[in-house]
Length: 160
Image 1 (cartoon, one colour):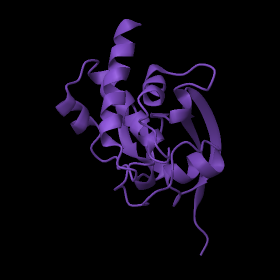
Image 2 (image 1 turned 180 degrees about the horizontal axis):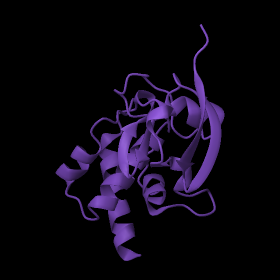
Image 3 (image 1 turned 30 degrees about the vertical axis):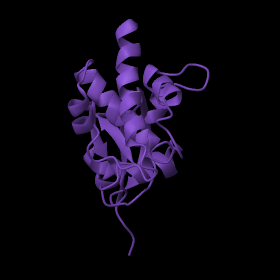
Image 4 (image 1 turned 135 degrees about the vertical axis):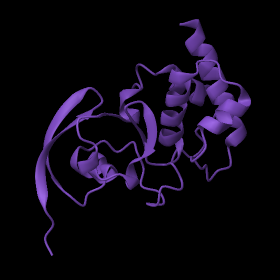
């Protein structure tokens, strides 16, 4: 059975993309398979692991749980917007320095959740960091290093 599709404009990382999307496609599918933004990972496909976390209007969401058609005009921010190897964001710098990235599969989701947290609370306590990262799972069990990474990112961002 063929699905319905529509032309939509998605606002991703400050750019507009006019794209025909099937009404059944998730935001994760569109980001990865149609726009080639592969930072968000397909993990559980149930919204339980956080590997697909992106920001929608600055708030973390599991992109595997939202249909692309639901996004509308709202701004989507992916890990690709943070920085690249020649110009790292302080959050990326901190994750590298504190080894918060272990195998790296969950890292993009943690980075985006950390960004949302630090944008709204530049000096979070450890308890606030833990709460801000709820919904992101690390299969390597690097939670201590991830928390240290977010604390370091807060320090780096306070200096700039």
